[in-house]
Length: 311
Image 1 (tube, rainbow, N blue to C red):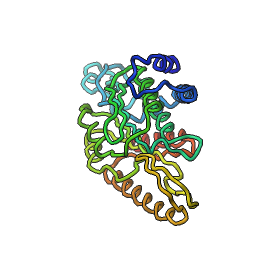
Image 2 (cartoon, rainbow, N blue to C red):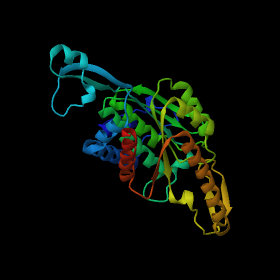
Image 3 (cartoon, rainbow, N blue to C red):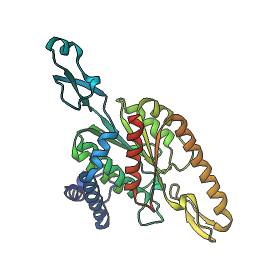
Image 4 (cartoon, one colour):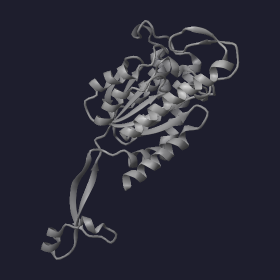
């Protein structure tokens, strides 16, 4: 299905904006792989884990029926029990009515990757997995692409093509623009009026968007997925080398033997500030790395959240 959608986009030059290029064969292959991989994971349990972790607005009354062995005694309807002379219980069902919103950073720094997968491709795959799991559970899915502004806004809907278009847009959109999540996330929140499970997927290059994160955490069930490449934490101590800034395009002649340690310290301090802020806000954070499989980390995150919610 995804391949047909992408081929359709690629064959419609008149309907595409002037800056959009036909998708090359290698990109189509990567997107097909993402669809196959994420559908398989959803079919083999991720959708169930997702359902047990992210809840809707509450529960609503369904019916009253006779008590059966194993029923929770707290559910006994004492008025009906007294009238009928036999125990009856109230039955409730979960009112899902859940909106999942995926805010994905597509700024220039996401195109980088020192391992087999670039940060942007990892972000696309995880976003696809979450979108397909949400749709499998009949939840609405919306999405936005962020850089130094809101590049794209897709209103929440229960349509499969919403997930397909999201993957297409993440991978095909040219990597440009600096990371300014304070502005971009703030702009998104102004348009996102309904309370949602808000996944923010970014490598968080630069200063943490403190004000925007505070607003997001106060209005939504915010979950931060931090995309990390090993070179973000430990720049290579080699050189001299010529480096290009992935966001500004500026080229510099750098001696990594002198600059690697200070750069690693600066990046580490930025991450620590972000983590302290998220901890203070009570926001769940999951680190996903380009040098490790993401599924075990995601399943472990679901398990931790499930246990916490059961307390």
